[in-house]
Length: 328
Ligand SMILES: [Zn+2]
Image 1: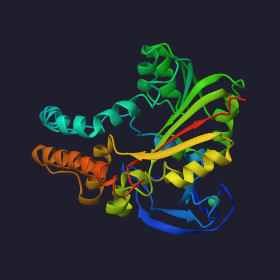
Image 2: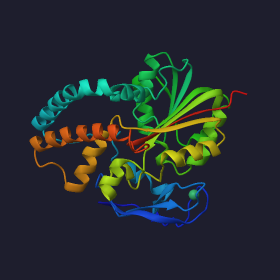
Image 3: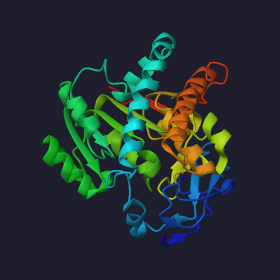
């Protein structure tokens, strides 16, 4: 276990208001960092964001990513790994007809392309591009793609492996030229930022008039957050610094100057969150057979969550925001 130096965050750093602790006792889900974290919800009704308290000092944050998934691979036994991957294929086949018939398959396909399937192809920037698989997918579809990430190791790999132009560091300090991009994506990225508000303003500046911003982020009002409490994977302390609901992210995006803002939630891909949340709560499955069972249950939970949204709107696993810069 490693120590990471943190500072208390008594006030919302988006609006300066006080908040109320909504979840405490959150541990690092990867189990590498020593400590316990809370999330506060901002009391200001015009804001309402959730923020991590205490939060790592910016100069210490690298420790939280030293063992992150872009760097290391999980170490299951060889046989267990094989059985699990076979089981996963079988389970997916088992669920496929119902995914197709009720629209969950289409939702997943749309999210894989960050809702850009029907957008005219142009210049795309992915903020928080990680290992670059999304950018490579979009490049193949005819987009001119670029990526930015804090992780120098990851960006170098994206450039060497796919020949994609990348930038390292903070979007704002990169100072990219104004009115440049047709689309900007932040897939599971805004929650990692110290400066989400300033980053949205920067996205607006570098988008072309009429350009589209698409963001996904864990939903604090999701069914899984309610079920798992402190064990919900979406807290991801201390790497997630701000968390949102449909309402709070829509508001922040509007306040940043975007013209048309559409916000909703989705469940495609939620199985992994259920699976990991369950492992945080009850411990990892003791053998591969139990792991297969847990995998099956997680797909069932994803389907259940997807269907529950018809009655309880905005309770899907992730928030999706699509926002356009005014074309004038
Ligand atoms: Zn606030």
